[in-house]
Length: 334
Image (tube, rainbow, N blue to C red):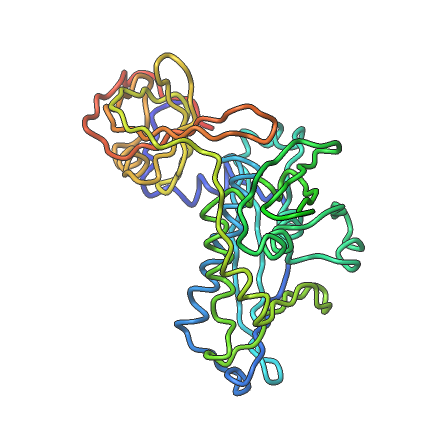
């Protein structure tokens, strides 16, 4: 590939390299005396909608990895005695890995809504192409735990996890995707922020998630209070910070890219660069070339997986030095 100036051409690259994988539509309705005038305090609505976007994006990242991303787009509507928000989830993937995605069991936007619990119950089973849940979804699981600590978790048949919590006869079988989501502090905090507007003090008494004009999940004051007790019991080691040289191996053409592939200690690793300007500065330079090397401070976290294996994640905390590679050949795109 010849040297192409990337900066300023992002919209063209986005159309060329990115395609939609799945979409889903859902509505969120707020009810209560505070919203009977079809208005809602922006200090309550804003954080709740942001948390919903973070919840869906984090869940997609956990279940599908960095190859796909989800955006939640909103538009407001006015209904009698309530405030209703139309939500449009768009899941996209880089076309370079589209064949890989098609041949892998990827959780779609609709699947993610089901695993979280926004589409549940008998009506959810009627959704075309939806996966039927045999056990508790995330919202149900967090309410069932009621802030109690987990004592053990063992893989079970059918891709499920058998979870035990404090107390007698406190055992439940949940799907592995739900268990993965329950271990994420970001997911749990997003759930809590999403339900925070519901209380007697705010005058908002419930949130209801709607699909095709049917109510699926209603979170009332009692349920919201139970969810505020939730916490993530993350199976991860204490983060380790070290200095290392990383060499660019594969990139995503986006100034907001969160993950690139680098060679670290002669092994290719998918490394989080979201706290740096690595992607933005590469676009400003006009490209990425073979041998581009960064001296960085890297945070390493090791997480235990339900099957007994371990997953290591790397996050660049600070760039100390940049050494350009050969300008004759550009690095391959993801």
